[in-house]
View 1: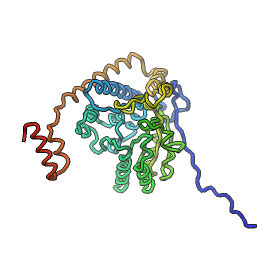
View 2: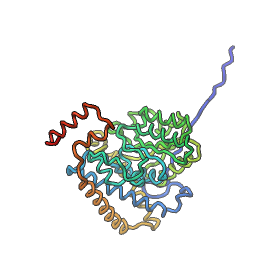
View 3: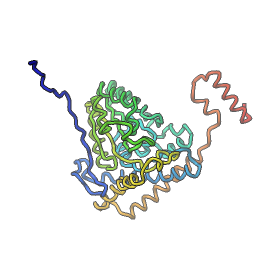
View 4: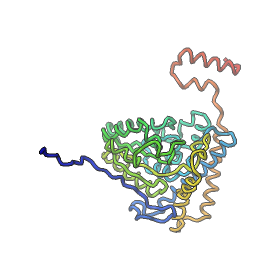
Length: 363
């Protein structure tokens, strides 16, 4: 009888899940030492409120015909603010097209966001860090760019990291896999943030991947993997703290899956009622990150309704100033669409430029 070799397991894995603050605003686990003083998170909560005021006004601006298609970030505030707050100014951020809170934390002005969605490419010329990448509409291509930046930091021995964001649908793109594979192969300081809001436009997460978690996708590339309650600012901050420290210490990259929800439509050109059940959306509102943290801060005696009203009024005035700056920005002349494509425009482009000027009675 031939001996049968013993069964051998060559690899096992587990994905840790982080949550500290429940939907009711009460702690479900002991806070990490870095976040036990809740006062440190008060400025971040105020930023979450600012983002929500901005988002509400941006949608209203689009509904009145003063803005093009707009991608709401309603419900993502804790994830976005936590990501932005965890980065250093010299780091590089590669967003998709929805992470306004993170970008505001890094110096991008609300008027830049409005200009972008208003169809003016100057909105991508941020007032904030010039080394951050512009918004990326082709999903997940920014992940590969961030991996390249992270590798350059390692080769140059710079104390910098790269952070990229994509959605749950974006985590199924080849660019995402190429980024995590490169980061793992070169131990590059890259943090890939998968913002799992449940829907890749109209495609549910269950229909576009068979993975138990999206975090585990990083295992194939040798990255550290973590799943986080993206509506819990404490968990977001702790997850980012671990990943950024790992990256800065030369231990390599990470994939963090942030579980949140898209409370608004995919964009203002979408109607999510066609594919999402009302019961699902209602349940998601019960996990809204802002009431969750508000309840906790009020219980700690750090926030009051009067303070929130005053802050909301202040946020409204600041956003109105940004809206006015956007609306009063002079429109670029028609030739601008040709003047920034090539150093030496080809003949056919010059012909198009001349034709456009002729239509305006100029030459």
